Length: 294
Image (cartoon, rainbow, N blue to C red):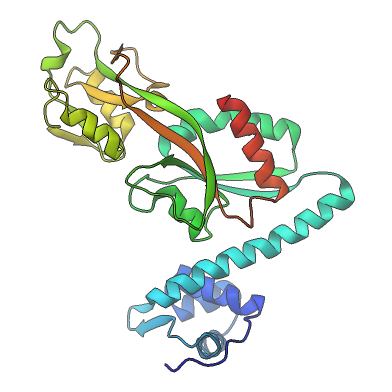
């Protein structure tokens, strides 16, 4: 499709693009929006003409975004989120309160042990903020990818890992969590046990540390998440090397042993978009995150 002069898309056109991507089809998007399929199709074709790119592959299985479409939909989500934030921000200036929804993407252990006290304090100070927390595996694009794609306002992310922070985002490290050896209570020789691991466990630095430890075997068991690792260890199945957040809810059947001054650590921080970083709801959350990590 030949490029044409770019014309700004209206908010309703952005909502239609987001709906088609979310519903994976024009008919389903039309039903979700209370529109006709022909109106949705016409709007998407108009958006494609304005942007000069095909945004969706059409087929019997529905509509799937092209690479250009994925980028367009990510921008559409972020623009729509800013429009929503504009309304709450303006009303907040008038009322003197901080209100509005707050979408947070976090990996499992951060959701279980880092966020609850933070959200409790946030609710006490700003009862008008309504948080929505989604657990996202810290693999591939991870929580930072959810923010970049406009699905979350703030991501609680592991920094400098296999899920790198996209350069378009901003953020900061909140804490460095040390790794410890975890093994069944009372085992006479825990280092002789099989090693249990899970995909989200390690940064590249941690893997380098593992490679230098002659006593650490190759992981022979890959669990689904850190909770499953702890369950296997507590049952006597093996040992593991795990970060502090994952150990906050360790069962009674496990023992935690310090790995010494050269132990590896994992950086945990927050990421957001430059445009949302200045909003009242995001600033309020960041203040509470920093206070909890101080």
